[in-house]
Length: 214
Image 1 (cartoon, one colour):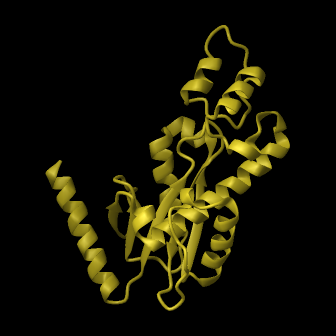
Image 2 (spheres, rainbow, N blue to C red):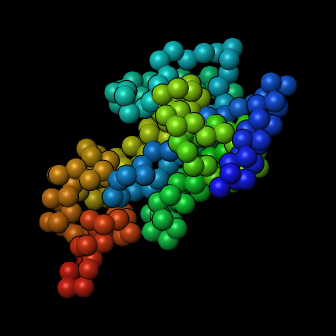
């Protein structure tokens, strides 16, 4: 769709021009598209060039302890940051891609101040009031996207740890809802919890006719 690609490129250029004239650019990333349970999270971050944060990179390459340390620094030093989510019900209703776009949009709309340009990790972006630029592998290339990755990941991990208290039989505190062999084993043993995504294959299969839902 060349026309659509051209619109996106022009939009990104407008945002870059605004950013160069003093408008803010935010980085946006998500956490939790792949798990079988729990919400999907997104974060948006406007970094302060006068207060650089050392060690920002893709959250998946960092230890849990390092992510928490960096998350605290981001919240303290960033010009603006916001974290948002889309629920399990929204994931099952919209599909995971659209729910992720919804979480991203909520995060950007919650930012204060509002950005002139949102730089999104990946090749898909939500509809936003500001200009948009997508960047494949952005969580490893752009510090603001790395910061958003860290905030989204730590926020989601905290929620899954809380879910473990309500549903300890699934081990959410360990695998954070991802389809590890142990999670799949427990899912087969106990059946899906209310926090499992019914639209995802391994969960849907357990709810097929003839299978009792827990």
